[in-house]
Image: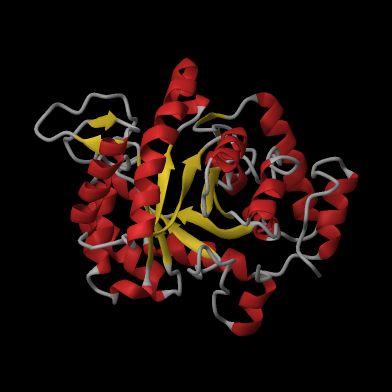
Length: 346
């Protein structure tokens, strides 16, 4: 993994860790906000944002059929037509396909998006249908990284075990077939729980896993279980949700979000303590959050969303700032960071 300090010394965005022969940029672009996640986004701004990311050296773009019920993939596909296809690593997901011509109303939480409801389906045929729909929306003949999406308790509750069995018997077999044919270069899962990453890693032959929110400056639940297993099995890790839904970007202010909901008092208090240590070293909280996540040797890339070109620029500017080694020492002394958590070299 490249050190974030390399950005300021070279003026370019360093590469991350290889994913099945693909070499992503250290920072990837997350397409969830392009699906009108929290607000309606006009088309021109959406296109400008993706193109700004590509122009800045970001070469991995992650999306999903779920994001705006196909809208994110449509928008990314349009932006991809302005650059050589092989210059971009495209990541998307299976587990849902879109039904045409029906009312949306499926509780996905997207404010806008396309009027097509998502049908949850982890079967072999369902995964193939999802893949084919993604090819059409993205305007491409292959996908670089294909992930089984949201097989976790967070999404399915007490139905999770049934969904896991369905995914391994169906979607996983479909992804294996696509990888063998060359239509997909790397296969994996994308979930919100490190325990599910462990289960999938032990159950199949995966190249990559996207973990959202469970390894960050705020919480390191994946440190003792999944991340060592990923290194052992040579599974590259794509980290998402590294700001824990916003609180590590905004700080512990009233209304700050954690896990997509207003942060509870105990989370606000812990973040306030982390923020105070960062401030004592002249380091912005999101700057420290990014530097910390990049330091783990299993991490291939950090996927960050954006809804405007200036947000892309801000994220990369944060990456370029050096972080003094004493910050990590003080966070560990204060019990705010796991003692065995890897940190950036000085």
